[in-house]
Length: 230
Image (cartoon, rainbow, N blue to C red; front, side, top):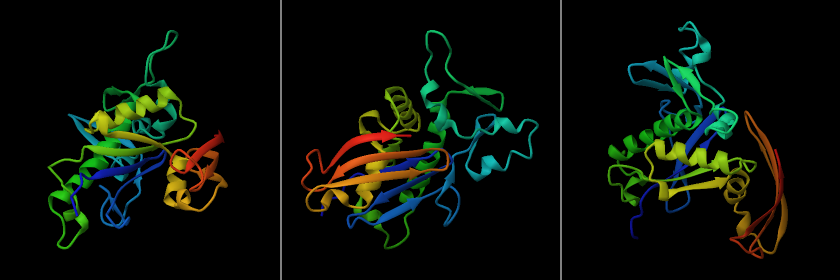
């Protein structure tokens, strides 16, 4: 079977993030900078200074060590619509370690940490692992990043900016609505006929409800979104 380039699937969450790759059998393999078994990475950022950036639990650990705990940045996903300047207001920035960061840059550092964790494992794969199925050429350049269904063009563009900041190539970054990702994970597009599905995404920082038509009888790849609220 021909080897394919590895494509990293990323749930860039408000409170936690997760990264994985599906092998040729559809089995998921997770990557994390958190240590063995800790696949959920807190979506937390801290700039210590001198260029050193901490992500996840390491960043959380700084809250009790610094004078201003607010320099440990959380919940940046809620500010993705403020990544760009507007006529009447400047972009939203977060201060940490004496520097200011855009929402896309904070999210980009989180994505970069997940990307590097996956690349480190591909560089030194365990014997008999799934890694030989892929044509890894020193870096992972493709990613599918999930976004809330309510995200508009500005939030989606900022999320794409974050992926590019993390080192992915722009033309290989795909944004996928979180409810569609959930339905895909359940294989609903392969169910016979057409079904009306309500997907509830009860996240750590957001809650979205999306109504979909799903099944082999539905055009557009087996899914059609009918409405959303979040």
